[in-house]
Every structure is written in structure tokens, then in C-alpha cells.
Image 1 (tube, rainbow, N blue to C red):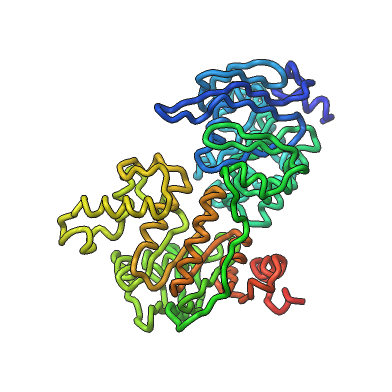
Image 2: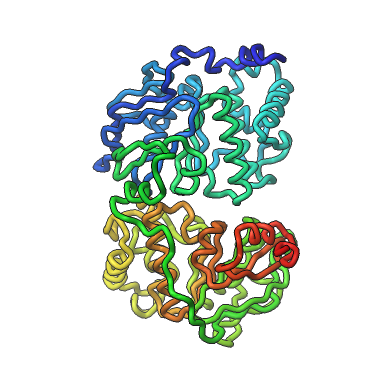
Length: 531
């Protein structure tokens, strides 16, 4: 099929839309949106130039996602004007946005796990004229789009059986299949490995080269500098400034985001490790299907040091942390704190680990760290509610618990400073601070931290990093797992690398390059990676 004929088959192609020659793909003027007393967007002006990659940055709660949800039709603005390709539109819902050529890939994918890739791509578009040539035609178009944009994925694979990176490809393919010329991506690399993120950037460059427009919402300044043409900075619901990326730098963007100078590099003194506190010996973990996820892992962490575990997501790090913290039963092996072997089998294994002095910040704060329908003070004692400082036996001293929660709010700069607010109403960064405050404000021996800054804005990242260093300097043993290589290298005193459930190497963060670590993360032997 010729390119011209193919465009005719896509009913929402740019060529078919009025105003397609406008210099601006998107123009937002005086956009306002409130949720009760919260003014999420305040007189927002934004212009996005056609055929560019435009970054939008800001702290959690700055209004970025709200603004893009208005553009995509999830929300309706209280006031203001939206122009698409130079023409004004009152976008009523996501179908209307799609008809205008606007697609969106959300931070949390909107896919049906037990359906195939092909089913997910056509879901909701079954009545489109594009699908009248039968499902077979849709399959062919999906394969063609995959090849054209390096987004290949098996159309017949179930979503639940493919990687997170492939699931994101499906979301992008969904938008392209519907003829999107303007693509909004909300924190697209938050769940991707470094290699998957690099691949995504190549895809975005291809889209830009073909004249499509990409709006990238992210808090990662390195990504902004690497891939965008322009960047708009939001703070507290307002648009602060729009800059040419080539004319700015991460320090300036961070200062505009937060309203003050931000320390982008982790400052720490050399570690002075003491004796071994945490010992993991020959630990193996099997999942419910009997598959080995952690395979005979042994290591130790000393007082006053941070040991980081690097690895591509899905190579056993999550299962390792859950076994060490008592959430899941190991198949074999042992965990010791100060020489004492922990009995962590059974439903109360995590409680016994806490009593032995182990604090755990889980990788997924929503699934394992918080009950978001609870008030802040209730989450502040979650897992510790039977401790003596909160009452005796089954009787909870709520006044004491609330007083301690208020103290932690101040200590960890949790905003808003309201212990009675439902946790769901806090931003992601402040939700993470609630978990960190609960686990760190203890008489602990070992701190186990998984993905400490996932989905967290730059101001909160700086704060969290300082708190982790503070724990190390207080003589605590810290075990850190992160998919962010920069974070692992900046915080760790020693780095262990996991691949396929095994520890495959150890590296000095002062001397190991990103290439060295990346090779080990890909399963290349340490000696071979060093060549």
C-alpha cells in the first residue's frame, strides 16, 4: 500500500484535519481547573510547536497531569481555550481527543491483563471505519506500525505475559493505531529499565522525525536534557516558564521547579563501616509456581554502610527484599541480624523482623506500604500499632499516635501538614515520605529500602537521599534496591549486581562505569565486563 493510500485509511491523519499547517500543534490559553478548594491549574498558557518533543516538568502536585488530562478530555477545564492545529475545540472526552489526533500513554497503563495485545489495541475502537476491513486487517496494520516505529510486539501475546516495557509499546501502538499525531506520555520511564528507556527515546526521535508532536511529562532532568526541544516548568499549579532546552541546564530547571536551589548531586562523606549487622546466607526463594526467583544468594551489610543492589527489574530483587523483610517465606537459606537468625516463616514473619530491628520501605508504596483510604496518622503507625508507645494490648492510644504522626510530619516535611487527611490525597512524593518517616523514625538496626524515589519529584528526591545518608552516618546498615543506576551509584558504598536471581558481581561505585554495571546487569561475567 502506498503512503498516500495508507493515510487515507487512517481517518484521523494530520492531513485530513483542518488547521494542520499551523505552527502550533497545541495552544492552551488561561486554563483553570479546581477540585474543591484546590486550584490545580491557574491561568495556564502553553504552546507546543508542531513536530517537536516538548517536556513538562514540575514537582508532584504541580498540576502537570491535570493539565494534560484536560487536553485529553479526562477533565473539563473550568475556563480557558484549547486550540488544536490552530482551531479552537471544547474537548469533551478522550474519544473527542482521539478524533483530533491526540493520544495519551498514562503512567499506570490502561490495559486488560487477560486479553491479547491485538484485543487491547482495538478495544474501544471497534466501531471505527478503520476496522471495517476485518480483524485481520487490524493485525496487519499493527504489525506494520510495530516495524515502522521499532515497537514490535507479538499481537497474540497476553498482556500479563509480556514485560512492562512491551506493555508500554502496546500503549503507544494503541495511540498510533487510532491515528494520533500528538502523543502525551506521562512519566514514561518510571517503570522501564535503562535499556528500555533508551529504546523509548529512539522511538520518540523517530516520531518527531515524521512530524509527530510529543509531550513528555517527567521529573527526570537528564531525560529532559537528552530528548526534548523545549521544556515548560510548572510550580504550584502555575506555568513558571518555557525554555529552549539547548539554552538551559538541569540546575536552572530544578530551581524553577522547586523555587529554590536544589542539590542535584548527593553529598556524603566516605563511609566508616563497623561490624556486620545483616547477613544473608544461601538464600533461595521460589514463587507459587515453583520457579526459583532468588538463587543461593549470600552477602552482608555492615553498620554505617549502604549496599546497593542493581539489576534490571524482574531479576529477583523484589523477591529478595520480601524474603529478607519477612513478607514471603524463603525456600532455603537464612537471614541474621547481629548474629541472630530470624524466623520469618508464616504470616507474622514481617512483625518478627521488625521486632529484631529491621525496617522496610517497600518498592510499591500503594500495594505494600500504605492503605490510601486511611488517614495520614493511621498510616504513620501501620505495622507498629501494637507497640507500647501507642497503648496497651488491643487498646490504641490514638492521641499518642496522632501526636507522633504530627511530629513526623514536621520532621520529614510532609505536605500538607494534616494528619487527618486521607493518604490518597497526598502527592506521590509525600506518600513516600509518610512511609519513610514511619520506618526511619525507629530504634532500628537495618534499613531495607526498595525504589526509594520511584515516581517522586526532584525536591522530594533530594530530601529522601539526605535521609538515607543520615541513617548510614548514624551507624545503621542500609540495603538499597533501585532500578535507577544514578541513584545506586550516588548513594551506595558498595554495589552488588543481580541477574536471573543470582548475584553476578560486585562493584565500587567510585570506579565502576555505567557500561560496566550495565554489562553485569545483562548477565555478562564481571571479568568479561571489565575488559
